[in-house]
Length: 560
Image (tube, rainbow, N blue to C red):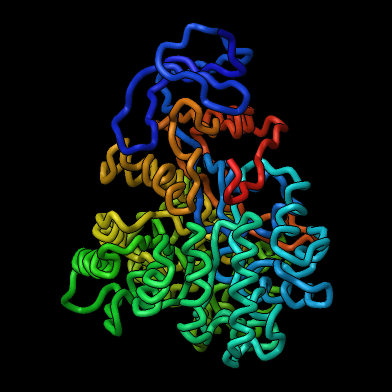
C-alpha cells in the first residue's frame, strides 16, 4: 500500500511516556496509517535514521489570538516543533464582542499582553460578534499550526455588563446571561473558559480588567456550564481557594499558571530566602500543588527556565536618566555609536550610579555571545561587574560594545533557580511550558521552551528520560485541553509529527525584529535540530525552513 509520507528508520517516541522504539511511520490522508515495519512506499520518503520521531508539541499557554492575522506561520512556536497552540488564555479574548467594543478589547489585549492595538485591529477581520463566529472568521486565515481556543472572562463580562463589568458584582440576571454565553461558546467549539484575577493586568484607562474582582460564586456558576460539557477552566492569578472552588463546581479539568515566589495559601517563600535552599522551595511548592489537586483534575503550568524581562542595547534599557532616555529614542546603529562615545558612556554610567535601575541587577544574567543563549549562567550582572571591578552599567555597556549591540540580559523574575524548578517538575500535576507566545512580545522570549526541554532537561541534565520529556509536551497537554486525536503516535491519530536531531536541538539567540504591522518590535527566537515538522499529514517545515504548506486547522471542541 502506498502512502502520502513514510518516515523511515526513526527512533519512535510515541508520547505516552513509553521508551523509544525503532521503526517506520506512514501517513495517509492526514492520519497516521501504520507504525512499525512499513512495506508500502511514500510519495514523500523521509530518512529518519539517527533521528527522533515524536508527536507534534502542544503549547497550552499562548496568546497568538491576534498574531495569526498577519503571521500565518505562527512564529516562533512553529520553529520549535509546536503543531497545536491553545489561545484565549488569561481571560483575554476577542469574542464575544459588539462592533462598538472592538477597540476596547484590542486595547485591553495591548495593555495586558503587550500586543500592539493597531496591529490587532488591522490584522483581523473583526466580522464576528459571538465566539462561534470568531472561530469561523479565523478559520479563513490558514495557519501553520492548529489552534484551539477558549472564551475569556473579560470579553464575556464586558459584553453583558458594559462599564459595570470592571468592578461591580453581577446581578443574578447578568450572571445567568454570562453562563449562557459561555455554554453556547463551548457548544460552538471553544475548549473552555479562562479567567484572570491578577490585578496589575489593566485596561488602557488603568482599571483592572473585567473579571479580576468577580465573586467566586460567579466563577462557580460559569464552571457549572463548562464542566458538564467536558470543558477546561483556565485561570491566572487565582489563589488555591479559588482554584478548589472552580474545580469542585466544574468537576472537570482546571489549568492554572504557577510560580514559586508565592505558592501556598497565604504562605510566601521567595527564591533565595536566607537559610532555605532553592531545592527545598521547589519541593515544598510541589507538595503544596499535590495537596491542592488531591482527587481534583487540576494541572499547573510553569516556566522551563528563568523568565521575566529581556533587555539589551537592541531593546529595553536597564536604567533611567536624561542620557538613557535620549539613548532609548535612537535606533540600534545610533545607540551603538552613542555608547562608543566616551563622554556619552560616562554620563550613562553616572546616571546609573545616581538613579535606581529599572531592574534588580542581582537577578539579571548575561545570555552570552554564542550561537545559543546561556540560560544556566549563575553569575549575575552585579557579580560579573564586581569581578571585573566595574559598576554594573560599565559591564552592560562594555558587553554591548563587544557584541556590536547584540548582547542580551535575562532578568529572572520567575523560575530564578533551575534547581528549584527541577524539584517542582517532580509533581505529576505540573507541565513545564509557560511560553506566553504572542504576548509581551517586546519584553520576553520564552516560546522556544520545547527546545530547552529537549536540550537542557533531557540531553544535558537527564532530569527527564526520553519517554517522559516527550509525554510532557504531547499527550499530557493534549489531555488537559481535551484533544483526543493528537499528542500520540497511534494509528488513526491526526498526523502531527516531528523529526528531530536530538544531538543538535537548541534555541538560538533571541533577536529583536520589527515585522509586526506598523513596524512594531518583537523578539523572535529560531531553533536548530528540527529536521521536519508535519501538520495534519502535510510537510510544514523541512531542514529548518517553511515549505509553504499551512495545514493548521481551527480545532473545535466536539468535532474530530
